Image (tube, rainbow, N blue to C red):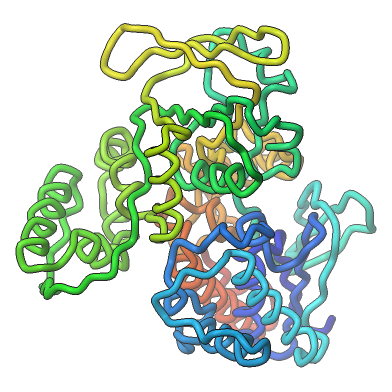
Length: 472
């Protein structure tokens, strides 16, 4: 490829979107290598699910890949519906995640057809990155190494970390599934067998929907520390006023503000959801302005409550969860796991009930860890992550939420130095930005990073060599 070459490692949503924005913003001489270990480019785990009942948690009108074309996804949906003779979707509908993955793949295929050979897809598992002068050598598992001027980690989410218990050997048994998105997570589970799900967030909701869709009739127990479930989206019909709020950057004042404004919104015929949505575009700024002790306080005390109010589920999904609870098939419990006792083809799980010293027990034929993505990079076994940490090219952030990055997403080395040609986007940057899960947040980040990289390339071209003006 002529000119500068950028290697984007990971072709899920974050990596694919970044590649598209780089091609839009960088000089035409810039080439992109989009590298993916899995079979499909453009989907990642979240949007590869074939289950049509795994719905997006954001309405269709807010899911465009481009901020300057805010209805792009909705327009694509309507064009597809017209071609297939289906009903035209509205901007407020929640479509399947697989459908959104098809949209991302459509954008990728369109770029491949009209991108003047600037985009190259490479299938392979990146094992290591090495610097060579001003370049980066990308070592793959099954191919010759490739060379790039800039590399970006878009490595997405990793499987959950197992809960700490006295007998971790249980996690090596076939009764336990560490990855809720693995193909065998629910394999060979009898329809009447009891199932235990560890964690009560969005991943748990997806697994419950999968069980129900598969005809599961047995009891499903959900165990988490607080027993909190994601709340539902609602369509506001009242007149909640969007006042210009000054958002505090300390936890207690912020919580008081949200409670006060939510009560006021409800009294005016609106909803608390409107207040949370009003904060969402500013949450990254609030997080970055928070002193580190306040960030720790947020994670320790406010995070579970923030998650269920901020990351909500669609009405149809919430109705199925509620129905399963009403008929007592789905049971929610709060507590901490203390022990596993394997008895033949089942396991008895002992846990301490929240707020008491009492122990309780639940029996399951399958335990699935739905506790959320693993984000402590010191504990992630991925070969590329281990190599980067071992060589000091990156370091975990102070809160163990991901990797340490600058405001422009340049990775920081073990010594805190900015690596000038190594970046990260997506969930790995959560420690710096906090809100880095939903499509609107990742889109904004990818647009910013693509623009920053484009500026670096133009600056280096103007000064005649790649190192000039390269800052994080």
